[in-house]
Amino acid sequence: MASTFKVVLKIGLTAVALVVTLALLTPVFFVILTSLSPVGIITYSPSMLANLTLENYIEVVKSSEFQTALINSVIVTIMTIFISILIITPAAYAFSRFKFKGRSTALYFYLMFSQIGGGFGIAALVALFVFLAQIEKTTGLPMVGNVYVLPFIYAAGMVPFNVWLLKSFFDTIPKELDEAAFMDGAGWFDLMFKVILPTSKPGIIVLTLFAFMGGWSEFILANTLQVTTLPVQLYKYTTGLSINWNRFAAFAIIFALPVVILYMLSQKYLGEAMRLGVGKR
Amino acid sequence: MSKKPKQIIFPVKVALILIFPSIFLFLFFNLWPIAYSISLAFTNANNINIFNPKAENPLRFIGLENFYKLFHDVGFYYSLYKTLLFVATSVPLKLAVGVMLAFLFTSPLIAGRRIMRGLLLAPWALPVIMSIMVWRGLFDPSSGPIAGLFAALTGRDFSIYRHEWDAYLAYNIVEMWLAYPFIMTVTLGAITGVPREVIEASLIDGAGWWSRFRHIILPQISRPLWFATILTSGASLQAFLVPMLLNDGGPVKIVSTFVGKAFVRVNDMLMLFGYHRAFMDGEYGYAAAFYLIVVLILAVYMYVWFRISGMYKGVGE
Image (cartoon, rainbow over all chains, first blue to last red; front, side):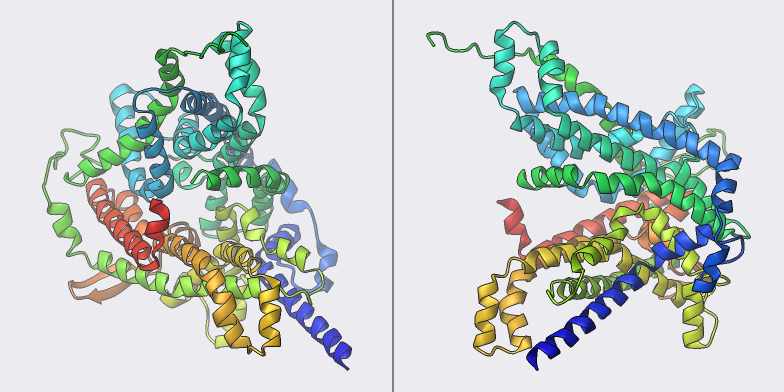
């Protein structure tokens, strides 16, 4: 009797859980099915599955809007990754190994900023826009709408949190390693590139991931500074007079795919980053 | 070892060279705009005079005029009211869904719960802006399936572009969807901290469902949940992408508050209100003054939360 009750309960609870899960995944089903449906149709019922097509994907990839946005996004993302590694790694190393005046003040400030700085983001956006437009006006250098300026802004935004993060990685590398190499006659330059960088690979991978996620999916800054990256183009799709949701859905999936794949591949590394980030606080 | 290993003495100059590029970019693109924003708040900067010194209304210091104007702006009060209301409704909704999911999915009676739990984290894996726009598709008045469902349920048209509270409901649903993985994960982490023996002992003692929850599980999850509540209510207070991407804070309607009547975007949440003042009206000085007030509101709000919850001590230690 008791075991029958348990089986019934088990089936019931599993059914409830399944329904809840499927209901919460509605947006995911919606975007996938819409992207595969012929234009003007959104597939709901099993009988409609026969009409599924890849036409939307083909049309999106062939469109010049997509190609322009993709090129912009690739430029912005790659530059963000390179600039952030180039500026954040040396700074984090210096904060981890050197003793100098103002070191702890700067570190403390970065920590505070990375915790509460988000709130300033949009507030400062107006000023950033005005500031860049003024530089453009006075020097003639193109700033607004310039795809090469955006990565510098993204990398700058990454500094406070990621300097801390990478410094925590460097702190876990024993100083004796530096000292041994130094005894062998290595200079600080050799030390950095031959000893420190190879051992801090996980930290740099996490940094690359954050830079990728930021550069690829950031929307507000790109939209305000009029750089048509993929998310900005995606937004344009939804604000037109007549919206082609099928093309939109195909575009959205192409845009999201690299992020989803990286998310799944990177769980291990991100877990490590979280552990260090939390442990330091 | 007769000789003590020589301490490496890096020249401080080297440290400064290593740090300089990051500090420079950070100051240039982050701190300077913040400082500049504060100074803009006391000027009449707009999209004409900031670029053209010979404009009719040249850029000048106007003292507290922007603030005076702000405190007589119907849109500001309505935005403040809508934002606080949004915090009051979306936060309990996010918490309820997240906590209920966590409890449902701890039950060992559910077959395949690990897989379902993984799938439920989908909102984390997808880019936020894409998710919100997909929701816009679901709420599209002419083709969106959820808009169609709501219309069928209520017997009238459901439109986030025409009806104030339809859009508001949509914001709450989308905000909940984006945030439940966070609440669920925090709660799951805390529940697993309740020792099995304690629950079993209470079962033997005959503790009822409610008393078990109140006296054993609640104390265990209350602290992490408080922390999650503070963070997630901060997110609701700063709602920007959800209203912007769903319908740009619309629709536009005439509203009246104690300072008068005016046409406003009725779902302009605070962060979006300032953005519209800057990029729709071109009033940079006014927007900067507004954001200065908003940052103050945020600071007070966070401070109060931390005081109420007693988290302040924990953070200081």
